[in-house]
Image (cartoon, rainbow over all chains, first blue to last red; front, side):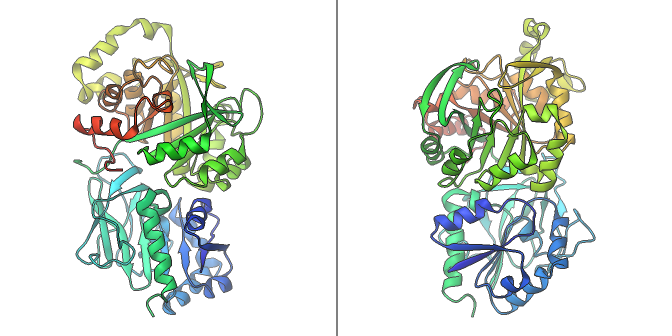
Length: 207
Length: 285
């Protein structure tokens, strides 16, 4: 199977590409809406500022992603890629997200250091008990975060993490997946999630 | 685990001409092995991150060794920082493409600080580590009182002691400790943050390689001055030194090279000691 990585000229795709290669999966990297439309599995990596996702709307990739999701193509958003699945972010109030999950992302306001950088634990919500992405990953496992904005705990959140406050670590609904942390940088636990995502896609996704 | 965050233990590989070396106070280099192999071993034994520094790239005026970075990155699935000889956005881009997650910049950041902002805007602040090699100024070295006060009062009062322009006077050095800049380390850390740095990697040149412990007062002064994470470096010799730098030094992460290389301490064993001392760490890892 080939995993299509969406390039929107923000941040660094090499680590994600390398992780899929390690798992024996091919990747293509593209910002062409037609290629996104034809994908069998879509990954939107992301670091940096929420406003960089504006490029996805103007390039036509956003519409292609929405079409692909509607067709049942498995879609994984990482970090800002997950935040984009929410309504938006106070980091860039004029940039709209996909609104697949309710609410929008806000900056940490806990008095702790921002950004939240380092390894922290994820714990499944009751909704996430049967999570496909987290299959085989124990509750309380450590994963690697680096972010200043966090998504709210709403319907569809499958795991949470605590950093002064509790926020969304993973989302999952049907063929839509997201992680606030970086599975490609989270050792064996993260590789397990990426493998789960690939296997879900290879089994034919939600269809 | 009160707020959920863990303190990080970072294994550092000082590399020259493709081999890992470790010196005492930046000289007397000893060969310690292959970077890719050592990086993998450190990650397996519980290191939270790996840093690879090409310590002679700047002094030799040559670019960093991309294929060493690529080879090291290919089997590494924890955060991987690369530094040494990064002079431009293009240098950084090549390293990211080779598999680095973060770039550490030192000399170039002092000489052309706008490079911090350029890399941060293109790759995100989380990808920019500003490395500061600092040496106490003689006045501060003889002033043992600040060290004693720190030890006596503990972490909660460090903010008062080190607020504003701190009592700690340390000078920034470049090119692997070869060139003095006249710049104050605490002030430079603040400026680096304002220009877009995501983390500060603070190395005490006085302590580096001695295995006598970190410079906790200097680390605390920098950690109080900035809101981004501070990685303490230089001087690790025992697990207790790490306890001290997380408590008295307020470090968010601690880096060590020589302590790990010859099998002196396993990272897992170090983390068990930290956990017993009440410091939150990623364990099991």
